[in-house]
Image 1: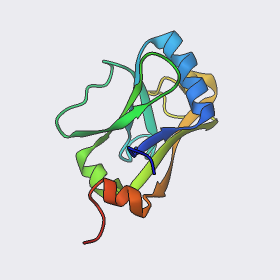
Image 2: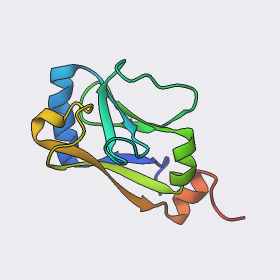
Image 3: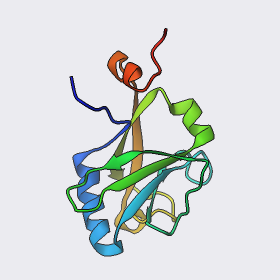
Length: 129
């Protein structure tokens, strides 16, 4: 059993793209969109270009193989719906939203989700009592 569980992960392909984008734009972060503009896409921004606030939840940091981790945020209201899920940032061919830094690359980030398992639910204090 792992010492620590995570709410977010990154696919190998998405990590490779994030490394390229980091070299081009500097440190990056994600905010999981809540349904506006590009559906519920993970939006990737250079750090400082999208300001998070007290109503945003930091789901964790993605290790993409560079010195700086890529933090993933979601609004607190949306988190209430997604708190029982584990999210994996992935990438697919296609064009996403114009606001996210990957849009000119011919790829777009997507979120794949699965339900937390029993050990994860217990770790996050969500297990049935």
